[in-house]
Image (cartoon, rainbow, N blue to C red; front, side, top):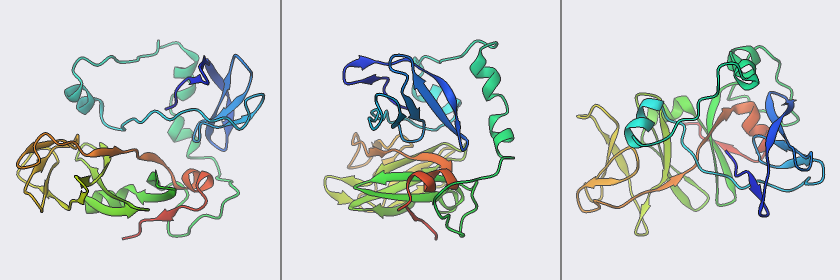
Length: 231
């Protein structure tokens, strides 16, 4: 997700094509082409410019609705070109061969889904299955200690696990119908939004870390120096 305003100018984007199964946008104002995954203009007058990233979650609609009951929903009309184009998109593109310039790590299959993190000048890929096995998954990307959590409904979030300069260690509380975390240092209870709900740190908020869910071949192609979480 990207801001549609660049250098104070609002841009309107349309589909220009697909590059190795990655969406290419064209802005109507300058005719420049933009890469979906990086937000970078790769052709045209604005080549080299980058759109500003808008942090967002990949969670279920049910969870989002419970967290933002007054939220608005974008629902395209049933007969739009986009709806027709995107119907069965994942199923159809999964049949296509993968061709990229980067050398893929043989530990992961090209279409294994990862959660990519870009922090402190470092990039790291976390296989979704690894997050599922280890939730809450503790790690460090550059100088940033992180925790990644995958709820039972498939919703995924990541946080900087520092509070007041201290890196916390969490464990999942099992007596709840939803994923609830408790930090071992203070006994504070934290919900899936990263908010302290009970205990000494009640009311504190963990800083979100943006996770980009992507196929391994796509993440590796645009982040050739990435490391991989392999535990």
